[in-house]
Amino acid sequence: MPKDEEDRAAGGGAEGSGGEDSDSSDEGSGSGPDGADSDDDEELILLLQARLQTCGERDYDAHVQLIKCLRDRGEVGKLEKARQAFARMFPLTEDMWLEWISDESRLAASDDDQAKIIGLFERGVADYCTPKLWEHYMGHCQKRYKEREESDPMKPKLLSEARAVAERALSDLGSHFSEGQRLWELQRAFELEVLDGQQDDDSAAVAAQRLRVRACFVSQILTPGALGRTAGQGSVRACVPACLQKQARCIRPCARASKTRTRMHAPSCFLRALRSFDHSPAAGHPA
Image (cartoon, rainbow, N blue to C red):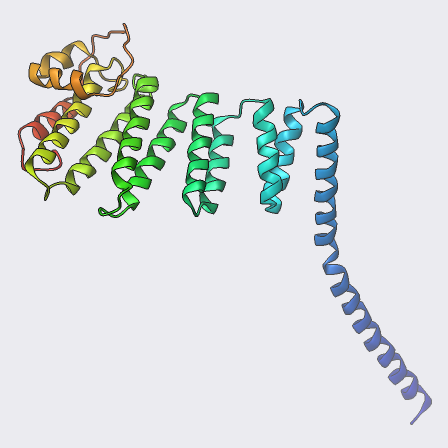
């Protein structure tokens, strides 16, 4: 072989082997950034933990950053401890409570886990008594009831618990001018579902549940502000039969009284729904 061809072949071989070395080097360094990120996260967590220890856990921002890091890494045990420490020092916002509850709900597998979630809701509404928190709390209790079979001996107890939570929510925020209406709608829809499930039961049970559904309608009407921005109370009370007002006083949730009065008119659709339900004894839902 001529010398120049030998030189070219040797050069090509060198280039080829160089390319392979380069590729293998790139592949080896590909995992570098991930490892570096992991190391950076661990270093940040240690730094935040030291920072909290130094200040006696009184650094709000450090708590927030630590919880975010641990949640992103999926470190469940450490995340639980970090949240407990944060909640001991500061009241959490409604979004923080709901995020915590959501994480625990995904892991819940036993009655003890459910009790823990209820405990978190109780702490949440104690920290921030907001319509959003109460709405999720009501929805959680109602879901637990609806998921049980009719033959489950726990079902009546869960129904009582769902109603008790709703009563507290409506007592605290049923008269909230812009968001209280959602709580009333949630409870009324739930009681209508219960009524649907009782249509094959004895007439006394159905009659009692229908009375409870009526009370949901009338209680909202009689609570100042509960019909929302377009509703007023004086005109509504005049449209409610005296017998229904009496029933509502006996059964309705203890809606917080208010001296606020307006001169606007109640939504006609709400009154039509009430009248329709009251005059259709065989139906579970108003037309």
